[in-house]
Length: 377
Figure 1 (cartoon, rainbow, N blue to C red):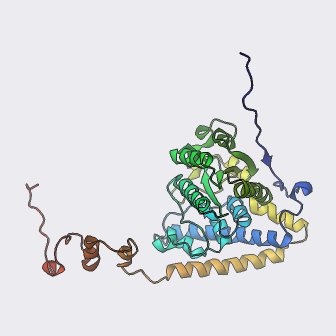
Figure 2 (figure 1 turned 180 degrees about the vertical axis):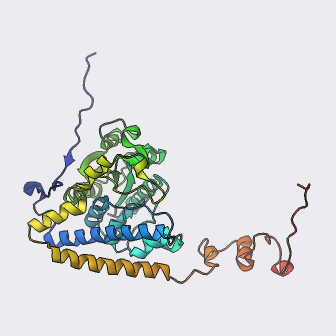
Figure 3 (figure 1 turned 90 degrees about the vertical axis):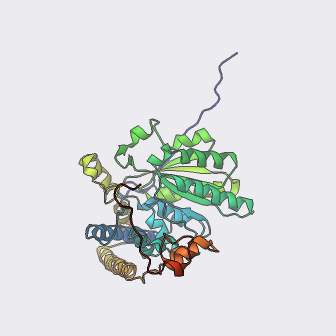
């Protein structure tokens, strides 16, 4: 029998605005109106300033561990800009900018990292799920949300974000396989920042691109310059149109880089070369947009100073709201768990004691618990 080719494919890489601010007029013309571009830049700047303040909050003991979004603002923002307001935005923990565009208040992000569960209650109707810290689990949630929309006959889709390290998780395979085989309208976006904490991408994936992993599932896929807001918007428009009209999943690899540590509990200097970091600093998504806007006469030093002053006020106010929020009542932990509390949890709530389970509260009032003496088991 003759040998025949069963698959030939290519993967496009999209870049419209390079690191020096050079713009591809043919590909980028009319992609983002000037007024919207200014707003997008302002949101990236707000996200960047929040990162700087959050870092200081953690270092001063006013907040727990925090993962900076610095350098990766464009990917989630471009997605939020393209998606409909009722499409699901299913994030991990470096998509603050997209959440801010959706209207999620800054204090929600701060409360999450301060350990206040109310930070995970994304205000409605923003159609954004809580921040997902476990690696890869949110991809399954996005697939389920999009499948539910399809089942109901809605045109709503879901978009989920994850890092290159998450593509080594079993959850990634399950979500991709489920979405592809059942024709689920979900957009998968891998923010490939080349590091899974301290593990380099070349150990995570031996293939030339992460995008080609989607081909194994029969998905359409594309790679974009994740630090180029124009390229991100271009790719997401294609992906969202595909998911919404064809009811099929789509995969985007956004090539980017985290300029900071993995989190405030990390020290990336132990495993990354400074030369590599400096190279990516020159590709900063904020810097290239600002260069482009200056060339077009949309931006100036005076506007930059005005923006920074406004952003500083907004972030300061968000920090104050987060730190002065009324403490939750202890009973809320129980009341938010079930629609109707089981009797044993009702007893715990009313007595605020776990050793009283199965007893009448009046029997244990003022009771002293005796510890076993030495030698008893």
